Image 1: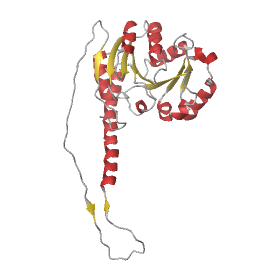
Image 2: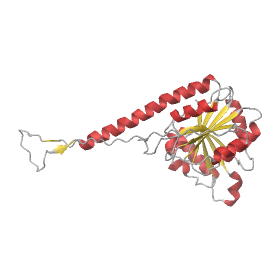
Image 3: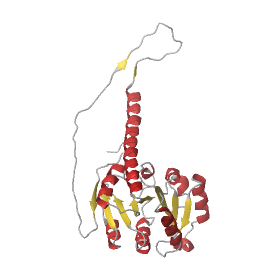
Image 4: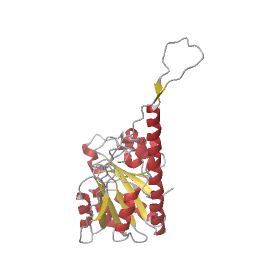
Amino acid sequence: MCTTCGCSDNAEPRLVSGGESHSHEHTHSHSHEHSHDHEHTHSHSHDHEHGHDHSHEHSHELKAKSHNTIQLEQDILAKNNLLAMRNRGFFEGRKVLALNLVSSPGSGKTALLERTIKELGAEIAIGVIEGDQETDNDAQRIKATGAKVVQINTGAGCHLEADIVARAINALDPTNNSIVFIENVGNLVCPALFDLGEQAKVAILSTTEGEDKPLKYPHMFRAAQVLLINKIDLLPYLKFDINKCIANALAINPSLKVMAVSAQEGTGMQLWYDWLKANVLVPARS
């Protein structure tokens, strides 16, 4: 159980591409029926007089629980960050550009990957790590493009973490000077907290969402280095102010690299490809 957000972290990677699908079910069920109740109270007596009427019998239970929660969260993020550093070292050693794609569900991440692989895959080797709670639907779409893909199902988990990504990297075994896309679970909250060892987080926001998303979920847009505004082919049919959306995003993160694209129609995609090619040999993390 991830105590940072309360979701489950019982996830395992499985290779989808290569003509075979391997599934390794490792369930780790631990039952701990022991409990710790510390209902100790302290009664203090003082020699001085009080002019107000209150009791000094109090419990330290609430204060102790608060301290433990903060310490445990710090420990989890510290462990994740250490493993992310190892992942980053692996990527840098092979000159792999690793990008963590983050968005809300339905923004078009998989469609963006499909077109990118089809139009750029002949120039640069591309591998994909797919994060999803239950299905391998998106991994099957990536497999159809011919790219190597590793599926991670997180169950109740709402984000990927560095340890499970490390195992997925081993299964993916990316080649030197390649690109690895990590398609995170659709969620604009928790993925912002977890470093996976990527060189950059790429946020995808579609025009079917509100232009105020950057203001409502600032942590994600502050953590990202690139923002792709997708589905711009739908702009004539929507009340979506793209200039206001860009202004909102830059108000949160002035250094964001913003690109407006349509993965469906291909509009603006060349800017995205140029950025990828410019960064694949030199890690983009700044």
